[in-house]
Length: 169
Image (tube, rainbow, N blue to C red):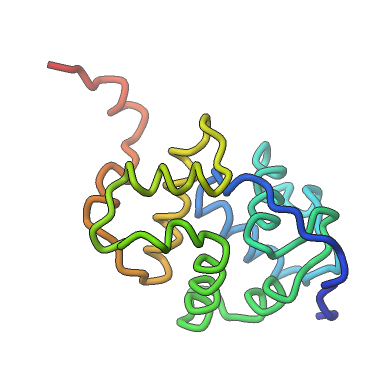
C-alpha cells in the first residue's frame, strides 16, 4: 500500500446514513483488491445505489478527503484483519475522533433522543439523522463500545413482510 495523502484538504460531509454492513463490505473490498491512492464511487459497484453514500461515509470518518485521497486512518484500518480486535480498536478510535459530541454524552445512560440531538449538532441532516444514528450505534456495538440498552431498542430490522402486517392498537 502506498502512503496516505495527507496534504489534501479534509472537508466533513454529513455523518454516514448507510448501513454499517455496507460500509464494512466496502472496506473489505478495498482490502481484497488493494487500496488505491484515491477512491471514488466506481470502486464499489457491488453496493449499487449506495456508492456515493459509501464515499461520503469514508470522507466523514476521515478515511478519505473531499477529493477522494486516501488518508492514513484508512491505510491503518485496511491493514487490519477483518473482524479482528485490532480492527475494532482502530475503528473505535476513528468513531471517538469523528463523533466528539456523541462521546461527550454518557453513552451508558444515553437515550436515542440525546444521541439524535448530538448527531444533528454534528452535522447530520434532519432527513437522515435516524439512519445516521443507526450507523453509529451499530458501529459502536461492533467496536464493543459500551452503550445504554436504550440505544439498541428498535435496531433489529424486521423483514418487509412483517412490517406490512403491523397494526397499531
